[in-house]
Image (tube, rainbow, N blue to C red):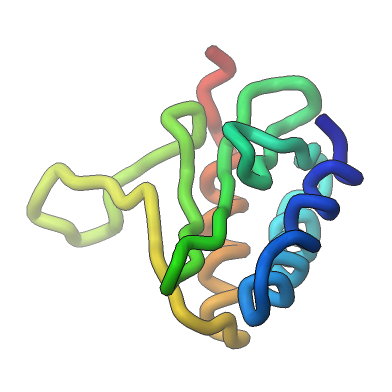
Length: 116
């Protein structure tokens, strides 16, 4: 599937998720321009070329979900005493600090992803 299919999918969402979806699409591609958008399990997904999807997002009933797949470069957050690695986030609005954090997550996820 192509960028056209992703944009068509986002157009079907109700506001405010439609606006958030278009903005997320832009934030992701601006953070890592070599990512290729496509539909992944019916959600906008982004991977390098024809490689596996590294990140995705979707509109739920009350939240937007942004997540990473197991093919993304995942690592523990610095200073964490546990072994958990974050791979999904929920939000109810999209502001500049949230966009900056998502861009940083996308750059990290694409930095050293697993190819299989």
